[in-house]
Picture 1 (cartoon, rainbow, N blue to C red):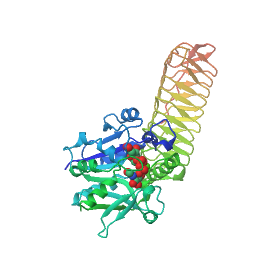
Picture 2 (picture 1 turned 180 degrees about the vertical axis):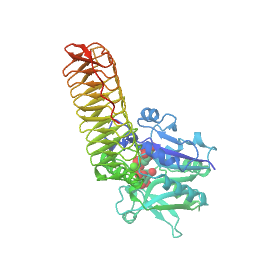
Picture 3 (picture 1 turned 45 degrees about the vertical axis):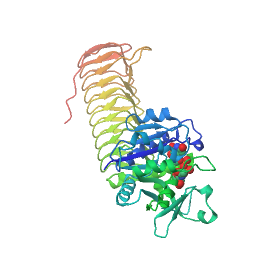
Picture 4 (picture 1 turned 90 degrees about the vertical axis):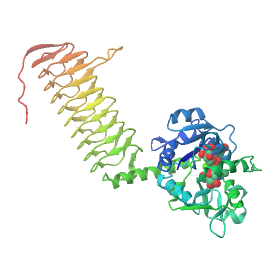
Length: 454
Ligand code: UD1
Ligand code: CA
C-alpha cells in the first residue's frame, strides 16, 4: 500500500513578524519543517509533497531533494492547498497523510497510529483530535451519536454552544486518496473568508454516510502549533525537555536538565555527565564517560571517551580520548587534540593537530601547526601564523620543550627534542635536540632529551 504525506507550508505566518518563512524558524537547531518531515517518514512509504507559497524559493531550496514541492499561488485555504498536490499524486498513492508544517512536536508514532486507524476505516477519513480546556483557536469537533465525526467547526463561525466543545482539531488527517481528490473539488468556498477549508471534507464524508474516525491524542504538547514567537519558545522548551529525557533514558547524567541545551542531532554516549549551562549544537558526537561543563559550548565537534571539558568553547574540533581542557579554553575549526592532551586556561587552537600527550597549560595560541607527541608548550607561546597576507605552517616535533613566551614565526620547524628559552623569537628552523634562545633566537648548543616517562 502506497502512503504519501502532503505537508502544508504555504501560509504567510504573518504573526511571526519575520523575514524568514515561518517553517524555517529553528527548533532545537533544525527548521520546524525538518521536524515535521522526520515525523512523517515513519508513517509513509513515498517521498513527501510539500505545498509551498510564501517564501517558496527559500523553503524549496532548504528542502533540496528531501521532498517534492508544489506551489500554491494564491493561498486560498488548506483545502485549496492539498488540491495543488492532486496532479502529482492522483493514481500514485492509496492513502494521503496531511499535516501542517508548523507543528514540530508531532511524533512519528502518532502519525503511524493515524494511518493504522485509516487502514481499518471503511470511510475515507481518519483524523487526530485532542481534548483540552485551552482551545487556542482550534476547530471544534462535532461528533455523531455513533461516535464518528460529523463536522469540524472553525472557531470564528462556531455557535456559543459549539465553542464549549473541548475536543479540538489537531490538524493531522489520513485520507483515502481516490475519495479525497474528488471531495476537494466539492468543498464549498467559505463565504466569510473566500477560502476552501480542508476541514469541510469531514462534512462531505458525513453527508455521504461515510464514517470519519477520530483518534484522541493523549499528549497535548504534541499539538502545539507555532503561530507566534511565544509559541515558538513553548515548542523549543518542550522539544528540549524531550531531547534531554531521551539522552537521560539512554544513560547520560544531567545535573540540571533545565539548563542543558542540546540540539536535535547530537549523539551522546553512556555515562557522560553534562553539567549545568552546557550547550551541544549542530553535528556533534560525544562518546562515553566524559564530563562536559559547566559553562561549555560545543558545536560540530567529535569528542571521544573519558574527556573533561570545563567552561570552554569548542567548534569544528576533534578530541580523542582522555583529553582534559579548560577552564576557558577555545578550540576553533580544525583543532584536533590527541589522547591525553592537556589544555589549560586561556589557550586557543585552530587548524592544528596536537599529538598524544601534548601539554599546553596556559595562555597560548596554536594555529596551522602540527605538534608532536608529549611536547610541552610553555605559557604564552604563540604561533605567529599570519604575515598579513597568508597563513603559514608551524611544525613542532616530539618531546619538544617550548619555553614561556616563545614566538614561533611561521613558516618554521622545530625538530624533535628541541628546546627554546623563555621569550625566544624563533624565525629560523631549530634542529633536533637543540636549544635556541634570544631575539631573534639563534641556536647555541646541543641539549639532552629527558627520558620518557612510562
Ligand atoms: C487549522 C484548521 C483548524 C485546526 C488548526 C490546528 C483549517 C481550515 N483549520 O486552522 O481546524 O484546529 O489548523 O492548528 O484547516 N496553509 C497553506 N495554504 C493556505 C492556508 C494554510 O499551505 O492557503 C498552511 C499553513 O502554512 C499552515 C497550515 O496550512 O501550515 C494551517 O493553516 P493555518 O492558517 O495556520 O490554519 P489554522 O487557522 O491554524
Ligand atoms: Ca495554525
